[in-house]
Amino acid sequence: MKKIKFKDIAKMAGVSTTTVSHIFNGNVDRHRISDHTRLKVINIARQYQHQPNIQRAIIKATRTKTIGVIVPDMSNISFSLFLHKLETIASQQGIQLLIACSHYDSTQEITSAQNLLQRKVDGIITITSLIDDNFYKQIQEETPVLFYDRYIHNSNIPCVTSESIQSVADLVAKKAKVLGEFYFLAADSQLSTINERLIGFKQGIQQAGLTINSDWILCEQYQENIGYYLTEKLVATLGRIPKAIFTPSGNLLEGVLLYLKQQQVKRQDIYLCSYDYNLYHNLLCYDVDIIAQNYDNMVKICFRSIQSLIERKQLKQQLTYIKPRTIYYNQQ
Image 1 (tube, rainbow, N blue to C red):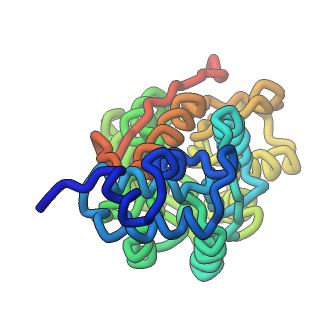
Image 2 (cartoon, helix red, strand yellow):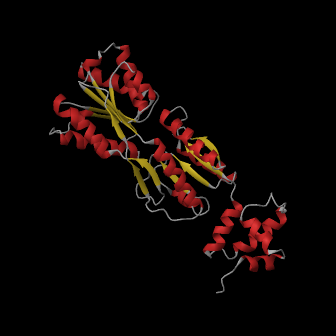
Image 3 (cartoon, rainbow, N blue to C red):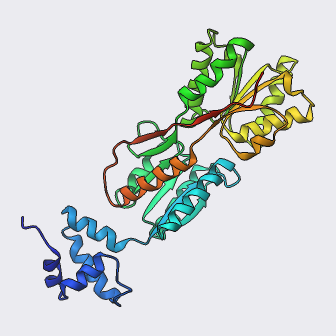
């Protein structure tokens, strides 16, 4: 089949090649090209979108320079920091973010995504709460989707996330051998991020030469103040303060710290470590060793990835892990 060029589309549309070029380069407003002419050219081009050059031209011509972002919790410091850094990069490139919140509800997430699609966003970045990718598989042909922070197992939708297993294992192993016991407090272990941190926790216990005790792992469904609730429950079961606690997120850690402060637990009576760093860790009355995500690198790769997907370019890898760093505050 003959390869269609811009001049061929121009001839079929009854306009100049220059007009077609302006349309495909997104310069409609600058050259005052009518919506009627723009749509006529694009509809003709769609008949030949199996050709890579025409497909790329259509994508460029129809871009709205908006990206939809869905987060499960606006108050989560980690997610807020991600949004702040992503918006900074996007605005520098002339791209606007349309942000929605799912409140950890799968139905709300799908509704949010559908609303974003109605606004014709060029792509969607989501911190998903779904357990499968059926919905996103249906839309990714027309609107590219990128997972951030967490992925769905056996999904072909790409994801950018922070490495967890080895970093958590190394952190836990360092203290577990000395302390002899370690507790993992978490919610929603079905999420890939929590599950990988649990795998890392177990590996760390094994690296320390200890046998994993199932009682050391407390994991329930997410609820408000889950960290506080799990710590209170653990202390009631033990009849004492545990020697060591690891939390896989900053939200969990906040609840643990609140409980310890209310009970006036001395800092030397417990070892704490967690995933997720924020500046407030420098001001805590407890020493908490922290695994800090490399947000700058994660956001840069996330933005670069969604841009590549929008341009229908193949990513080098589906699952991208960004190495974090560990900050030691506890000198005991």
